[in-house]
Image 1 (cartoon, rainbow, N blue to C red):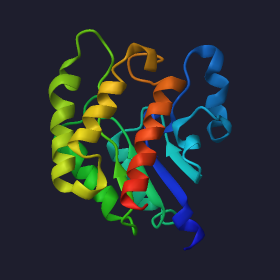
Image 2: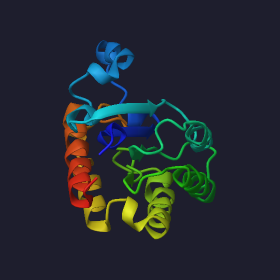
Image 3: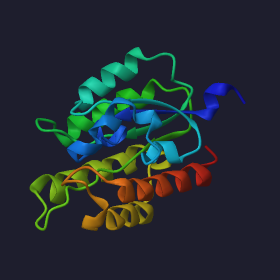
Image 4: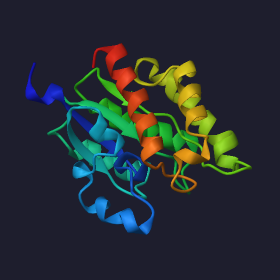
Length: 188
């Protein structure tokens, strides 16, 4: 096993980097790999994290196309559809990104709805379309429907959130548990 196989490359937006909120904790955003509460630091592997807050799926795609160094790593894509992106655009860019990889160990995490009493239109209608298409195109590279429902249900508790979108330490522990279970189940 090469050293690359022991590294996890993470691509995505602020959910991938696990941006810290509230303001008093934002200092950790400057040194995320040293923050023990972030989901990726709980996986027990060397991490290359390329998460960028607010990054579009097209920016993610372009960065993955340019990154030849981490193509053989186990890869986790943790990204949310951003404003101005359609489900078709999102999944097509995702497919181009995944096509660059040289590993079977790729996990595309589901769209996690915003946390509000009444979910917005994207959370109720658009995100499920993306998740269904990801499961159709990449059945071995995503959580199965039961695993996804469990993750989304556990993250629907307000005690797991720092705000509508971002998870706090409790939410990130849940994310880490689900991701570690997928890595173990798939042998990645």
